[in-house]
Amino acid sequence: MFRFSLRRIIAAWAVANAAVAIGCGSESKVADSTSATRAATVTRPITRDDFGRPLPVGEARRIVSINPATTELLFAIGAGSRLVGRSEYDEFPDSARRVPSVGPALRPNLEAILAARPDLVVLYASSDNREAVDRLTHAGVPVVAFKIDSIEQFERDAIALGRLTGTAARATQVVDSIAGTLARVRAATANLPRPTVFLPIWERPLIVIGSGSFMSELLDIAGARNVYADIAAPSATVTIEDVVRRNPDLILASPTTAATIRASARWRAIPAVRAGRILVYDTATIGRPSVRLGAAATSLAALLHPGAVR
Image (tube, rainbow, N blue to C red; front, side, top):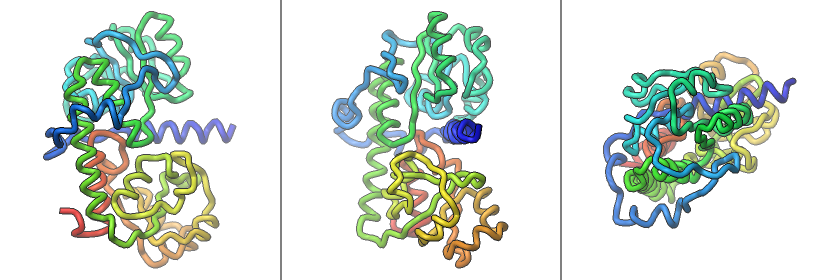
């Protein structure tokens, strides 16, 4: 029972945090002349989703997206006007809120989805959604299931959605622009000291970010080292005692988690907590694997190395 509950916690966290305001500034422009070839080289077009199912063929016109990250991607690549349904979590950009909600993103309301008459449903590739995929497929509705745990998966899925909606050129522009920003931040922090960082995402049980998460990748780009980079998974459960043993230089936490850490006696076993070395990040920018990954890296670098990125 505990393992089932923990899996649901992690899946719910992943879905709820897969949302971010659609890009701004330079991230809405073409980065450079490499955009024409990026899809074929870095992102390598895929033919199957994260459940191993073949991608649908044809250009989708009525889309239900119940994954916040893919909903925002669809708006970013110019296909937002085709959305006829979203999950209750999908609130970015503001225009997404005008799309009718079909309910939860995990174990979704199939009746509400079918009532929207979609020709494509995009959802989060959690085991909680496998039954929904099977039932929608049986009903004749094309479905794709994506996870966006890493930056590479973000790029891959953006290109895939571009192909599914006939907006491949715009999708490549978005991917390439973000990649350009990430490269700029990495170059700016490459020769700076790299503090070790502990990044908790849940307190009880204590769940932390591992190297399989885009957040760990962002730490590396922004000039730090994830103290749990030796864990290959996106997240894992650990103990306070193990955090003490690893002795991170800094704690990086959301506003809510940071308040909990400061108020709880058990966290004071960690030297960085006693010393007040807690950095609070903007969850709307950093905690979500979507089209503001470049902005997220810039924001993290500003926390870790003020003034390094201009």
